[in-house]
Image (cartoon, rainbow, N blue to C red; front, side, top):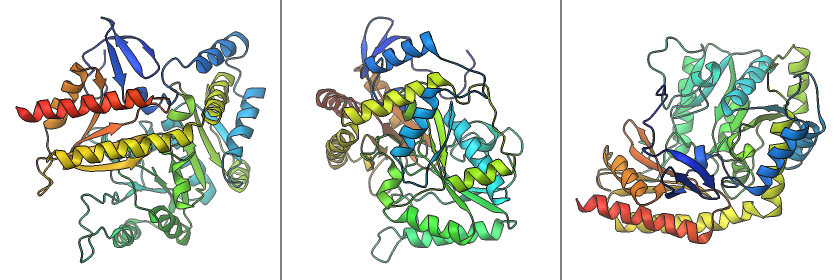
Amino acid sequence: MVRYGSGFVPRVITRAQGSYVYDEHGSAILDFTSGQMSAVLGHAHPDIVSAVAEAIGTLDHLYSGMLSVPVVELARALSATLPASLSKVLLLSTGAESNEAAIKMAKLYTGRYEIVSFDRSWHGMTSGAASATFSAGRRGYGPPMPGNLTLPTPNAYRSPFRHADGTYDWRSELEYGFAAVDAQSSGSLAACLVEPILSSGGIIEPPPGYLRRLQELCAERGMVLIVDEAQTGIGRTGLMYAFQRDGIVPDLLTLSKTLGGGLPVAVVVTSEEIESVCHERGFLFFTTHVSDPLAAALALTVLAVVERDGLVDRADVLGQKLYARLAGLRERYQQVGDVRGRGLLQGIELVTDKQTKAPAESLGAEVTAACLARGLHMNIVQLPGMGGIFRIAPPLTVTDGELDAGLAILDEALAAVLEH
């Protein structure tokens, strides 16, 4: 196997069901990552299985210039969950692909080329998306796309921007960041591309009001705002879309992971104005799997189950329970420095001690291994200067008992590792 990232988990997985995956020995492993943060309905959900079987047997793939009923129905169903201005849908396959398309639309619509993103961002591995990704993967590949600039990631736990009382001064940090962008810009600012909660960047949640002010600063410069909700969309944070907390409406919205329930589905949603201008200027994103009916059938099923089973509200309720339990770990362990996130996308940052906040470079890997040995799969993000951050994202269908069991294993693993 080509080694394409971090090391492989030392188990071979043979099947998955609900909140669990099972290895070659039949051992059950509670999956606190929903696959790659995608399987919001858990693994092998019966509605997903049925939808895939029907689509494969009737209408799975078409010539890219053909439309089908599932694709049109998805566009209508998805836009019905969004503010009125977000009414035009482009159906694709992956998060990187949707961000690639959104970046191209922003450039074509504005006639500019500079893209601003957070300095801990992750937007994908294709050319334009990778150029706007700063948390990893930048060294050794030659020059990225020109015109990619950064804003400081709004990390309340580690930011040096502080009020006199020690609280986080995000407004000054944001103004400082845009001043730096203005200084670097060639006068061709097109878009700002942001995640409402940075996941690979360490579960960093901008404070309330941040995204609204960010959009105002973009508007002052004639930039469009692209919100990447690959991991936060479709109920994950206790709202249908994470941007709703701040009362904003992005110019372009990208969805992927959670929309497909674990299978490759992605969309770009934008306004009629942006779509019309881009079309007039010759917008081209004609790919092999654009507007595939199988992808549309999957996404329609996910939307239907989320609404039918009240999973957005459930994510909110379970998220409050999750936060309380993680906060308890923070109180009991000197090495649990911070708890952040919301809904069923939360994280804890491990440190050597709370006073210095010094990164605990090896602790996360040890706790990850201890969790796996006890039947829990956890994901640790290792970032320079930040040590280890666990990303906790069980499916929205996780039961109270499964959530309790996973958190009990995490507690036990922390205790076991720290005793040595």
